[in-house]
Image (cartoon, rainbow over all chains, first blue to last red; front, side, top):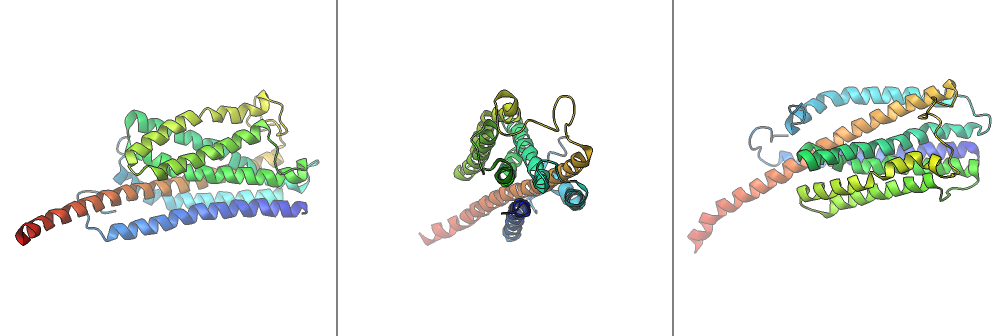
Length: 48
Length: 252
């Protein structure tokens, strides 16, 4: 491996891990808001 | 202050702030990457491989900073029993594991061409690996205990026990003879690296920190929504049970 390969690999892994963290949070948010919209809101502040 | 710690107010406030924070994060990271690859010079010893430092060092700082945030949240859970503190610890653990993983992997990609090895069991590397395992343990703990209050307390206690590792990581290069180089930025007597390399590093560190703040706020919002969903599902099930009782009695 050349030095450029090591640099590319390091930044690619970092980008991939950040993408996984962000993707997981966004998917979780979509799932939660969809589940909440199916339930009737109760009281102040429960209608998320 | 209590107004800001109210989950409903927190959801409203973060919904307004997050787009601006994401904008600042992307701008800072773009500037940091430009400085890293265009402006920063190659090192006279390490050559171009020094550019890995601009992602490795901010990830290393963040891995310790996130644990400090979790420790403060753990105190919020144990002392004030605040639901936002619980959500903050739970949301931060996977992010801490992610940034520590980036730190370990990018360190290996730097170590192979510079030291001739992917890994050595020296004090700095080993203590960071222990930090990564603590993060994984905390994520597993949150997933194992179903009752959120019990999980929050157990995780808070484990977090407070694990915080002893943070000064060990920081001072490992001073206390023991390590292959890992000593601190060159956060040290007595000021930074030891040239400003042409220091500035890109600081900009990348600010960008990475803003990225963590964005991800953390989004993950806390999810935890608040999850708790709300759990409560509403419980109330809906209870209401359904009450509605069924008269029918069952009539059937008998």
